[in-house]
Amino acid sequence: MAKKLISRGHSVTLFAAGGSDPALGAQMLLPERLELSAAARSDVGAMPVDWMQQHHAYLGLMLHLAESKDFDVIHNNSLHHLPVALSSLVPMPVLTTLHTPPTPWLESATNYAAPSAVFTAVSSATAKAWASSVTSSVIPNGVDTDVWHPGPGGNECVWTGRLVPEKAPHLAIDAARAAGRSITLAGPIMDRSYFEAQVAPRLGDDAVYVGHLRHTELVELVGSSAVAVVSSQWDEPYGLVAAEAMSCGTPVAAFPRGGLVEIVTDSSGALAADGSVAALAEAITRAADCDRGAVRQRAEGSLSLERMVDEYEQLYARMAMQPTSQPSASA
Image 1 (tube, rainbow, N blue to C red):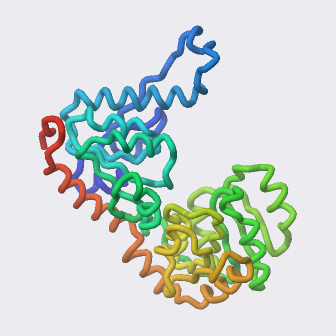
Image 2: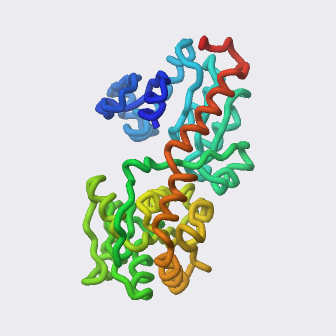
Image 3: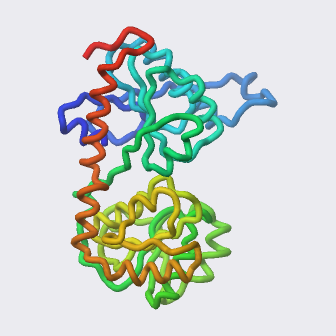
């Protein structure tokens, strides 16, 4: 998104960890590293070092922004509570995009958000999950449809993502087998015990795990597949892997969880009638009949990075005109 905003003539400054990609072309605000004293480290009630480093970084950022007049809008994409809780300190409006269901720390912080604070959610499902705490408009995530380019399709199913219980790749294997198709799985193993117990025993000639692929390899794999299977057992805040597959022209078969209901349409895939393997297998069969050109059109029209940036640009412009609790920043 930073690259796209810069290409449209915006000045973008990123708050990011050291070593972040310099090719983004954005100015960087690097966090100051926290060096705790021996006494602080020995405190029996001390939080983990990683937690303290994040706390220190975001606290320093918000105190820095409180003294700054260099920005028109702050866009907070983090999951940390301090940018929301301390938003009243800064002299410009703060936009927070809600990428996940409510978490205790962030939900608590919303009680202290500045009156001028604005919230968006990546799907209507996520906005609904947050509705008891904040009101948020919906700007769905977008994928780069130039990077996720159309592929030729194929006969096999594909599953991509983190191999964890809530993503349930083992159910994708079962459903593909029930539909009479082989499946290739790709992604990082984030829960080794789950993988060994549920995924590894199901692997075979018709179910292959190819590891954590480079991005170009992943695009090629997804684009050369017949159907992308999304077997999530939790309410996906958005469903990025589904949008990426559609951008490649690959239809999606998915359980109807969270934002996936908003992404997958009859012309771009099929939602399972319920949460069973049999229903997901039937969805795979239906999805395989989708026209790949129509699937790609769905991605270009509604799921693209261009569309997302268009919507954020319009929101930034409206926010920059709003009064804040402090003197407004110069344009």
